[in-house]
Structure formats: C-alpha cells, structure tokens
Length: 252
Image (cartoon, rainbow, N blue to C red; front, side, top):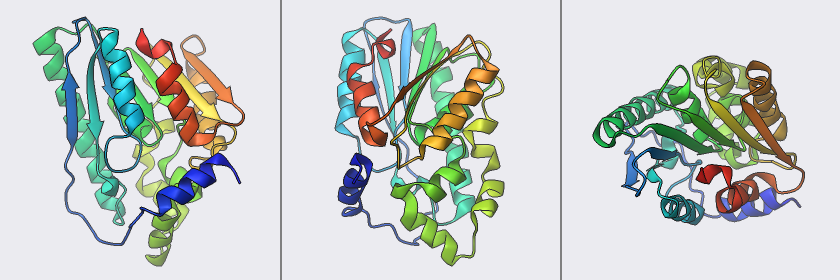
C-alpha cells in the first residue's frame, strides 16, 4: 500500500463529507509582518479544514528570514456538493486575495510577492497570478492541470465524486462547468514570473499524470522560467512536507 493510501485511510476516518449545501464560506487568514519590508509570501492551503502543522513550520521558516507572510485557510466545503457553489467560492477567494495583496502592497510597500500553493491551492494561485504583475514567483507543489479531473480520479475526493454521480453529474460535465478553474487554462499570461513545480510519480491524491501535464505546459510556455522537480516515491502528502521543511528556494 502506498504512503498516500495509508495517510488517506487515516484522513478518511475524520471525513464526514455529506450532501449538505453551504451557501457561504468563511475565509480565515493570518498576517505576520517580517523584518524585511520588501517581500510578502502568500501561503494558500491544500484541501481540508484547519491549519496543518507543516504550514505553521513554514511560516516560522519564512519569518526567520525576514519575510512577511499572509496565510489563508478555507473550509473543506470550498469543494461543494453543488458545483455552481464551488465556482462561486473560488471567485470569492480570488477577489479577496487580490484585494488583500493590493492593500498590503500599498500599506507596506512590498516590492516582491510570491505565492506558495500546494495541491488544491494551485487552482487559486493560477486564478490570482495569471495576468497579474503584482506576483513574481509561484511555487506549485503537487498540482493538477484540471480541477475536475483531479477530483474525479484522486483517492482523497472519491466521496465527493460519488455525491456528484448520484446527481447524474459526469466527469465531462464537471470539466465543462469548472473549465475556467482549471490551472492549465489560467497559465497563459505568466511570462515574467518564475514558476517552481514539484510533482511525484507516486501521487495518488492528484494523480501524477495531471501534475505532469501542468508541468509540461509550463515548460512549453515559459522554458526559461519554469523549473520542475520530480520524485519517484514520496507521493502527495510527503512531497508537501519535504518542500515546506527543506526547500531553500522558498526562503529567497
């Protein structure tokens, strides 16, 4: 059994996904000002409730280097049983983060803004950064090229897939409804940004083929600005942990 499947088995023990429809989401965020007023790091969350301990560790790493950090936390029902609500939630988040970045740049005169995005967070990162001159560096950790395909084929989101199937929603319908959310469709206007991508051949949460598709597209569009790391055995969760704890490029 793969590491992703073991971790997913544990997480599913605390997964109480149901078909309840939530009409709104609450966006939690934490801003920590660093000693270096030139740099702001935006940290977007993977799917799930709460603040992962590795995110707390990453914030401490960045803060020690003088970076200011703005970390976001979204409720699990950002992926809603109602597919239209999901699209609305992502638009709400996109608008909120863009507004926060603009406000903080004005207030603190940040010259550099980077986005760190694992897993589902890459969807938000692409929506925010595409055709946005405020963003300089992007870090995509175990991303997927298409939100609908990642959800449909990933082991973490099978309960939600089953809910959609009971509504007679197919994967193709989901691709159509969420086409504007797909990272591969929001990567065309990032010419002046550096894009760091980390994927794993053992990823079962967002299957490797979707991460590889996004990485290949980024390299094709921006051969001088897209840098791809690939591992064979860490899988989804441990790739995030390794990147947060040990990657040095994040600290620059």
